[in-house]
Amino acid sequence: MNGAQALVDTFLAGGVEVCFANPGTSEMHFVAALDQRPDMRCVLGLHETVVTGAADGYARMADKPAATLLHLGPGLGNGLANIHNARRARSPMVNVVGEHASAHLAHNAPLTTDIESIARPVSDWVRRAAGSEALARDGAAAVQAARSGAGAIATLILPADAAWGPSPGPAPVPEPPARPVPSMAAIEAAARLLAEGASTILFIGDAALREEGLRLAGQIGAKTGARVMAPLSNKRIARGAGRTPITRTPYVVDIALAHFADARRMVLVGAREPVAFFGYPDKPSRLLPPDCAVTPLADASFDPVETLRLLAEATDATGVQPPTNRYDPPARPVGAIDQDKIAALLAAMIPDQAVIVDESITTGRLFFPATDKAAPHDWLQITGGAIGIGPPLATGAAIGAPGRKVLNLQADGSGLYSAQALWTQAREGLDVITLVFANHSYAILQGEMSQVGVRNPGRNALDMLSLDRPRVDWVSLAKGFGVPGERVGDMEALAAAIGRGLAKDGPHLIEIEM
Image 1 (cartoon, rainbow, N blue to C red):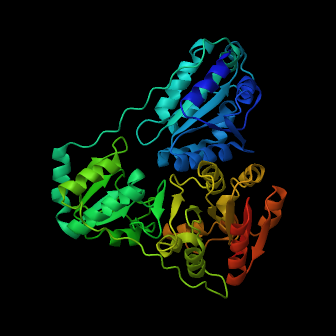
Image 2: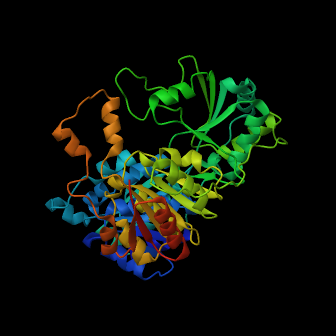
């Protein structure tokens, strides 16, 4: 057995069963080892940002890490944006980054880079394999690191000679330690703060936004009168009929400031204090009032659901009925397309147990509140602000949640960062419906220019914010990648197109002229 074979066996024993890959020459022994284990599903991405974004989507739905296989430092660099997003989501991921054979490094061949320095800013754990005999142990440590806490990014650098050299065999992967909960003194102190009512906000994130966490938070809010809120961008939220509704932090600074204006206390469970997405002239970065005290009850290393369970007991909320959404889909709108009507149509047509991947950016500002009373579904968001996550995230989510329809709500500008993911969807036969909102511009940046005080932009500025010379033909683009597509110009056609996508297996793309 060589090092690569031992590493693959270690991954499988540790529950890593999918490898999203874009390999090169230095990784061929690892590719051969993957080939010998058909129980490891290997998924090719045509660009590394597809590979890393898909691993993120898989982890969010499967609740376990996938491996990525990346080609040396430049391949890792190509995937950095979506590793950054995954780290912000606290998605578990094991990156295997190929490296030249150790003896070859001294010759400074063209692809030689400082891989550690590229990896560290987006990784929680980085290690260069010392050799083939220790490679399996290094792989086990990487899996253990990725599964720690709420999830982490582990990057293992794999020299080619460590892959081809002899190995004593696979290594066991230790179980991650149980996530702690706050002390009872901290729980009781937080319970007293929540008893102050509406001037206190219970701010929850991570797994607290799944069904059980939302139910417990809803009980606490109903009992104490405290408001329950979530961050702007989240890993995964359980939504729709039968689930407890949650209000997210607004994106626009002025709206967010008004939303938090009467807050005097905030208790954090699985979330950080809310701050503005960007800094603007004459606007604060901190969204809470200056006199609002923040209590970080449970950070990412803690178990947020068990923390809420203890908090519900401490507030005598366990027998309280939390608010829940009632299934109440609106009538399907007709006529000209606009944002309000798209939101209403989504509320009417989201299928039961769908997965919604939201990178709709400007067009989708109204989609989240409008779909509260849709059929039960999970909502995945862009967590790190690095655009181009939507198609890859949807790809990985479909593999991590087989049997569930995935709807990718996609802005056209950010979708062009990673449109290659459509090819992977076609190759793997994934049930992903991509709705492209084609306003042929970086519309959010047009608004941001005004926010920072720039008025009357000229031709240079407008050219950098528009996508209309020439306009991208998304239907032809999808066809080139093997995905059937259609273009719609009114609400009746959009409803019919979504219906066709839902009625069949495999990917489908709908370009919506905005």
